[in-house]
Image 1: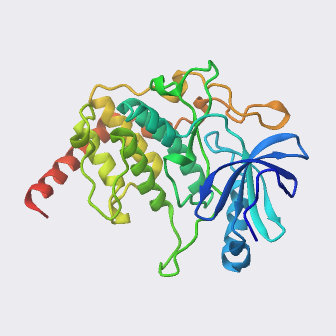
Image 2: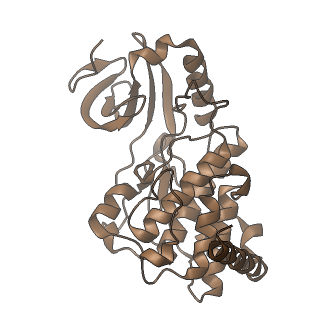
Image 3: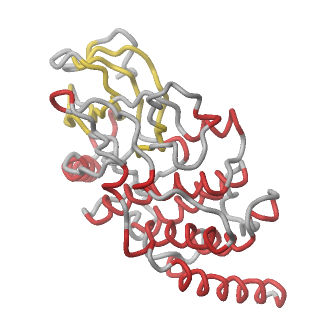
Length: 319
């Protein structure tokens, strides 16, 4: 069976164009002809529907993902199978992704980078609480919702962005040689990689000890290094225990360094993609505030500074 072609009818969807690809299949722009709206349609390669174990994982993941209501998760409209091919349809978010933003504008200032990662962390924490793992997070999966004022996101400042996470519900393939499927700690490491890339303009190299972000780009507070490097730790047991915990630690360290990161309640959210009956799927960023972690900045920062000192000492001694 060939790939789905532009202009082809796929179930209830008419394919308008190709947006990209994932490991498991095509990512297409399509019109939902039953509801008269455009969507992002992920159509998996035929072999995945024939793999019963994967098929069951996909359907189970999609069943959970479709119930997520966290504002920073792209809503899922529908999932299922058409002519032997699994698919998942999500709302179309008009705007750029972080990968294209970095290509255009280069690294972001630390406050904006930490603000963006905090929003993604809230999406991941909601998914993890529901038993769902992304498994393939990258800057291409983080979508900048088009600003209500029509402004260019390349010139935005911290607090002016709203992002939504896509890719949830598409169960990642499992390497037959791996003992278990991806778990939330893999997403935490991937989110640390996103933060590293936002700060430095380049992703951390796989299978290599990453350098401190501050050594690659002037203006990155050295105290932020420990937060990022802990998130990237090769040993899952050494990483942050949650995405939100890492994001809160990064915010706390910047606060101690004299860099203010706007809190979600301090600025309004631009209009999001239309939800049912024309309502917005973004209900305002204040709804996603994780208050407990944000109220302990000074104490958390002190712990992080001590951890950074221990990390530097290990680097000097080679242990």
